[in-house]
Length: 274
Image 1 (cartoon, rainbow, N blue to C red):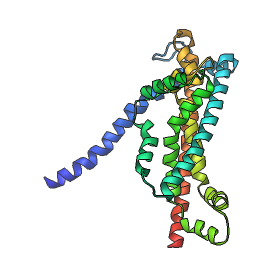
Image 2 (image 1 turned 90 degrees about the vertical axis):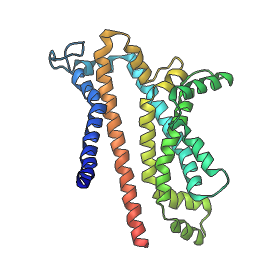
Image 3 (image 1 turned 60 degrees about the vertical axis):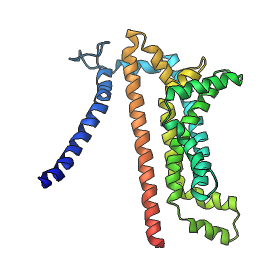
Image 4 (image 1 turned 135 degrees about the vertical axis):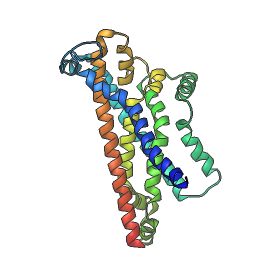
């Protein structure tokens, strides 16, 4: 009986994980399948195979404008979030001061707060400040959402960093800023690149913040939302969604590879110093 109790969780857990992954990603798999269907209505069996919907995407001016807006917002938000994440992660991992944990909790709060509440709150604050809704306000909102992710990635990079290298640089007469620029930043560069990719991916896919804070310049998620009102536009939306899905998957895969490479390098250096 005891042996069965030990084996049961071991067998149920893989089955549960498999069912969870199927439930989560099975609807996503239908997206690329229906995007190559000749019929405008997504249904089985497929009417035929075509790449027409993909060929029509570059010929849509509104889509190109939305893509450019998303690139501008994504690059801006990822750079700002990573810079703020570097400062916050270094502060959390290197210094001890009153309220450190409370500050860390406040930075991470957007991860647990309902996103629609965050979006409405930002909208009220921006309107009270007299700012007009534009891509700039979308960038501000995306930075608020992306900083916790950036800080999570960068904190792991700073915690695995050997502080003796900084101490050696200081002993050789290098200034604090010079040590940070020449020693610290190159060592945590994989974590920084990973943070940039993660933040860009999150910004590219973000809808609610952009929905409340955008003005007349729509981003890709807002463009897709607008196209869903028209049945004839659905195949193009499916094709565009497939491209976004592939792009997000590639970016997140590259970010994870860089993170693991940095972790292995830090672990190897720790073993050498030991």
